[in-house]
Length: 379
Ligand SMILES: Cc1cc2nc3c(=O)[nH]c(=O)nc-3n(C[C@H](O)[C@H](O)[C@H](O)COP(=O)(O)OP(=O)(O)OC[C@H]3O[C@@H](n4cnc5c(N)ncnc54)[C@H](O)[C@@H]3O)c2cc1C
Image (cartoon, rainbow, N blue to C red; front, top):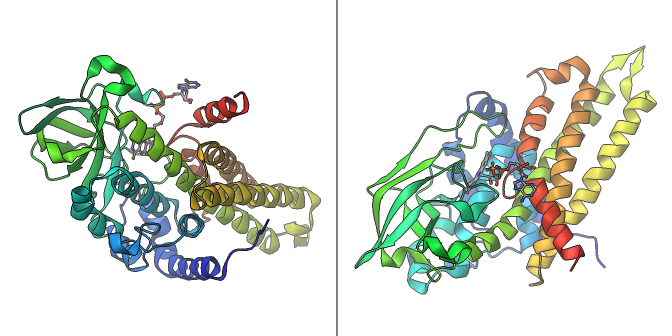
C-alpha cells in the first residue's frame, strides 16, 4: 500500500494551490458577502484544465487521474468552497453523465465545449417536493413525433442560470416509478426554459442555486440521454461520483479551517503567552488535525477506487459522510479557537463554518450516506 502521491499528483496540487491562492482567495470573502457568482473565474479555471479534468484529451478533457481531480477540488475549496462546488458539479454532475451515457453524436456536440470549460453544465434532479425521494418528482416529458415536451420545475440547481447545458430528469412514464424516469440534455436557451430567483443561502453564497421552470418546453429526441426509463439509474450513478467531489470540497474546507485555527493560536496572546501554549487549545487542534487526516485518507481511497475501475459507491458514501461531518466540526473548533473574533467577518472561519454545513446536505444527506453504508455492511 502506497500513501505517497505520484510526482504528477504532487505537481497538480502545487499548481492548483498556487492558482487558488493568487486568483481565488482574493475574491472568496467578497463573493460570499455579496452572494456573487464569480463568472470571471470560469475562464481561469478552464485555462488551468480544471473543468474537465478526468476526461480524455480527445474529448476535450485534461486526461488526469481521479485522485488528481479530488486534489484539485480540495485545493480550490480550501480557497473558496463556492468555487469548489461550481467546478465539482460541472465536472462530476454535468459533464460525467454526457461522457458516460452519451451517444457519439451527443459527445461530439457537448464534450469538447464542456470538458474544456467553454460551456458550463448543471444537474437538475431535485424538485420542490422531491429531494431525498428523487423518484417522487412530477416533471413530465411527453413524447411527440420528433421529440419531447417537458413541463414542471426543479429546485436548488447549482450553476444555473450561468450554465448552458443541463442534465434534466423527467418522467416519461409516470406509472413506472423509478423505471419511468428519463434523462435529457437540455440547452439553457431552449424556449419554455426559465430560471427563478437564486436562493439566499447560509453558505456557499458565491454559488447560485435557483429553481428552474419548464413550460411546454420542446426538445428534440436526440436530447434523450441513455435509454428511456434509464434516468434514475443515470442520476444515482452520477451522484455516486458527485459525492466524492463533495467529500473533496469538505476536505478543502476542513483543511482551511484547521490552518486558520493553528495560525490564530500561534498569534493570539492571552495571559502573556500565545494561546497555542494552552492544553485546551492544543487538544482542539489535535482532534481537528486527526480528523482532517482521516478524512483525507477516505477521500483519496474513494478516488483511487474510481481510478482503478473498482466499485466506489460505499467508499464514496463513507468519504462524504466523514469528510462533511469533519468539515463542520473542524470549522466549529476553529471559531472556538478564535474566540469572539471568530464570530465576526474579520476572520474567514465563520465563512468556513457556514460553507461546511452544506456538504452534509447536498448530493445525498448524511442520513442517505448512512443508509448506503449500512446497506453494504448488512449485505
Ligand atoms: C446549496 C444547494 C445546492 C444544491 N444543488 C443541487 C443541484 O445542483 N442539483 C440538484 O438536483 N439538487 C441540488 N440540491 C438539492 C439537494 O441535493 C437536496 O436538498 C438534498 O438531496 C436533500 O433533499 P431535501 O432538501 O428535499 O431534503 P428532504 O429529502 O426533504 O430531507 C429532509 C430530512 O429528512 C431526511 N430524510 C429524508 N428521507 C429519509 C430517509 N429515507 N431516511 C432517513 N432520513 C431521511 C433527510 O436526510 C433530511 O434530514 C442542492 C441543494 C442545496 C441546498
